Image (cartoon, rainbow, N blue to C red; front, side, top):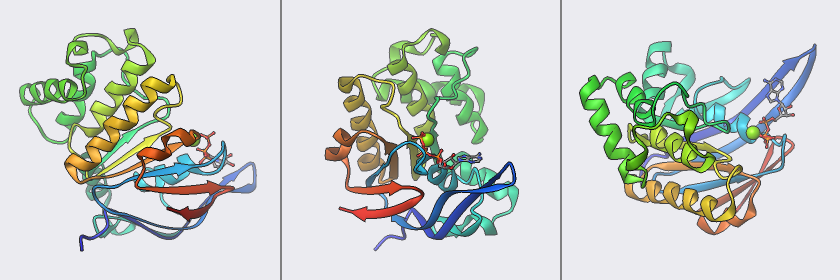
Amino acid sequence: MNAPVVELKHTWKTYQAAGRGTVGVMDVELTVEGGKLVLLLGPSGSGKTTLLTLMAGLVAPSSGTVAIGGRRLDRLSPVELQRLRARDIGVVFQAFNLIDALTALENVALVLQFAGNGRREARAAAGTVLAGIGIGNLGAQLTSQLSQGEKQRVAIARAIANRPVLLLADEPTASLDSGHGLEIIEILRRYARDSQAAVVVSTHDPRLADFADQILHISDGKMKKRD
Ligand SMILES: Nc1ncnc2c1ncn2[C@@H]1O[C@H](COP(=O)(O)OP(=O)(O)OP(=O)(O)O)[C@@H](O)[C@H]1O
Ligand SMILES: [Mg+2]
């Protein structure tokens, strides 16, 4: 059996704000294998974004561990962690975080350059990625001039450009109507299958359940597993 792509053990994240501790997530046990799409379902404030940022290596757990491809993130040097994040982890943020002064193509090419590709190579590969998810025609547009659904696709193209083994998407269908939302989850599922990547998607939307290999329910920072 393959090693899990991502593994959390007894993972907690607490925040200190105004002298008070708030629990982001508590004692999470989670394993996701390659080729699977896992849905993280929970209400606002339940800890979905916290969990995704832990898996992305963007924040360190308060206790417990996070491992990607069998490597514990707390045992990596800052440079190793940065490299792992650039090459092996793709993130689609809740607010897209696209660079609006750049075109769709340039947004995608940038992360390919961060991962070590030359400029020309990166631009060519970015065009291929955009075409692969059906927006090859939008490459030359500034992302500030795109619709929500188009921005969402560019954000996904950027997240998958380096073919990460772990793809994380934070409420990727929240700002879309249901038809466009289903198209997005279909793209994410196809990526999991085709690249044998682990894909973790947070959502409020129970209609996405049909697309998941596994559904994890989270509330008040605590996770309940249900298949
Ligand atoms: N930077 C922070 N500082 C302090 N508390 C935080 C911080 N980030 C999140 N929290 C708290 O942690 C808990 C979980 O928040 P989180 O953002 O993970 O929830 P969520 O499920 O993503 O919510 P939403 O669906 O609204 O995006 C909440 O109680 C929140 O107030
Ligand atoms: Mg959130």
